[in-house]
Amino acid sequence: MTPQVVHRGPVTCLNVTGMGEPGGAEHLSAIGALYAVAAAMGGPAGPLEGRWWVEDHSRPPLEVPREQWRWHLLLPPAGVPAPGAVEAACEQVRASCPAAGRVQVVTFAEGECVELLHEGPYSEEKRSLDVMDAFMAEHGLVRNGLHHEIYLTEFTDPEPRTMLRQPVRPASVTAASASR
Image 1 (cartoon, rainbow, N blue to C red):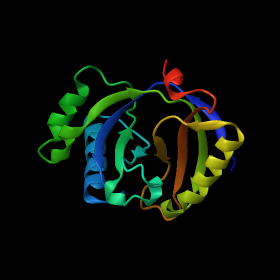
Image 2: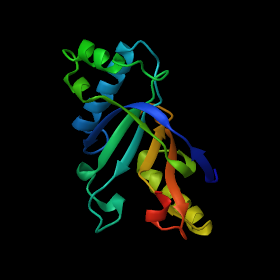
Image 3: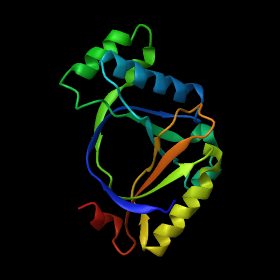
Image 4: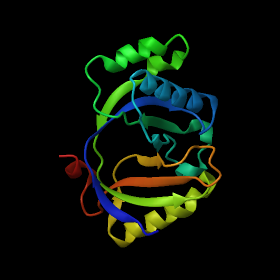
């Protein structure tokens, strides 16, 4: 599949922010909390999404130990939650899912993005990310936000499919002027 440039406007999601390796205890606890709260709200939700970053800028992100990766895990609810609905759902499931207290509602917009469907193991995403980087360079685009993944299949699926998304801006536009 070839990368494409898309525009992504505001979205509202349930969110848990954390740090740790994908599939680790912190990560799995956050996923469980998101789904528990969404279920208590009575709706289907999803698919699960993640926005990823590292704070160690001395090396490429994929060379930073995975336990140092930071993330926002996101779960889009069926609709925009009514005021107080998320808080009520968190209280409802808190006894069986203590991490539910970490669930918040966030709204964000990414604007212009480069997207590419990655088909295959997460361990092979670098190949797709390299394709995206080459596409951005060819089109005069640079990163302008957090790396974003949308998990189109369950984590246990032997043939996972993940939409990779990178917010971008023209290389000729400075970050300061892009944020105005």
